[in-house]
Image 1 (tube, one colour):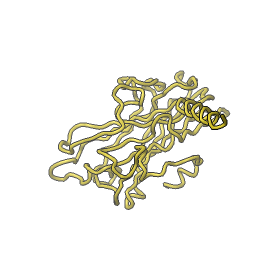
Image 2: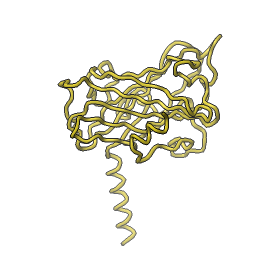
Image 3: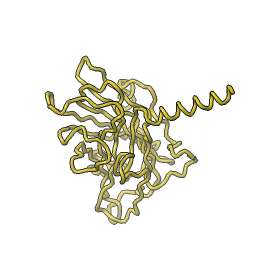
Image 4: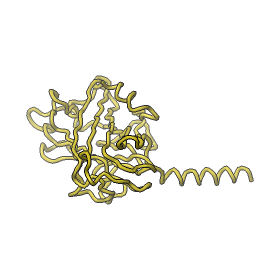
Length: 246
């Protein structure tokens, strides 16, 4: 009887967790969208076209007047160093091939578009740890002060946060950058929901559905498809996260 009670409790806890607040990452859309994919593949045979990563979150309570988001995304290989194809910062092989986009007015449409085309901001790729197969992308964007779109978000609403658009430049031919075909694991570590003081700033670290996306494949032993080669950030302060990659 006691065993059954524990089993029931575990099942109930699992059900609650499945609908809890958290963050999501995927290709093309949020996990609620029809075009969402965990894995993206590319033959690396064209220098035209793009791939789009979508970050989203399921809102916790106390989102009363969200004015901005900050996020951290980590990229990792199963081998070292980081391929040139993924070095998209200024001065590197594919400089300019990664851009942030915060406008969902033209899609996708699987989740809630809180920003309604009004958010502005930017992203940066940090290659400090490229020698060990790692890169970090950080971004921040906001609605203008006093914007009427700064409102509340009902708890449990699945909200779009950002898009990372990766183009095909230098994938093939003369002057191409090596490593397009390598397996990559991409992890959304954090979305921070900023509000004007004295309202609380809310940091989300854990997945609502899945906070990892795969490029080409991920054959490193990882039966849960959670990118075993990457250790997600857990329960760290925003200050400590920024300090790691200054």
